[in-house]
Length: 244
Image (cartoon, rainbow, N blue to C red; front, top):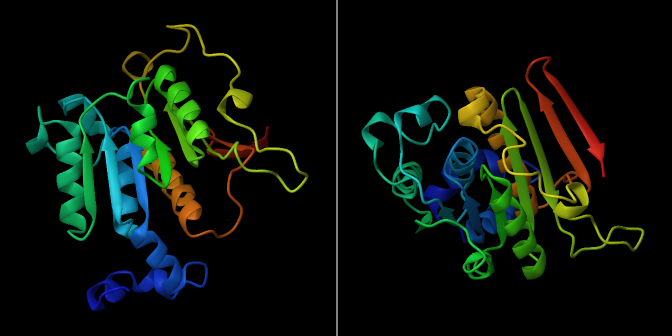
């Protein structure tokens, strides 16, 4: 049951017919694991916290640097040199002390991926490298955990939701990450954000949309991005969705 304070805090969700009281209770009971407390993880964590997700796990092995602050809005100048999981945990708790925050100050690896995803209901990938994305997608598919994965680079962003262990209405399985991207790009084939740059505000757009997809996995409404890739082009302000 929601407390009187929670009824007030989440009143705009509770009166929203797509979520309501039962949906808000599901959010409060949900456990979400966020990989990366950077450009995507920052808005994602803040909006999941604001939405009332009951438990937020945060995986990151990096520390806050001055160049992060252009897009990683969960951190501040006072957090420089602090671990990102510590900084993000403090920001989440300041927004809603009722949230259980679980910091995982580590890098996702083949040795720990299965154990990490096993404890959560929904996984969100805000990582910045293909090794982590493929590793996480494989771990989530094996554990039958929904994965909401996003990416940004320069002026472009993408977003999709993966449940390859579930069936489509036609009886075939929904596609997985390796159906969308069969082969990992060679090292150095795609410039990193530090090499090519990234529009900071675009991280906010994609991270916020990622939060919508995570919430949708917890308290279902509308149509999720299953078998669909949302592409955002900030140069021409164009949003396109492709089936795959």
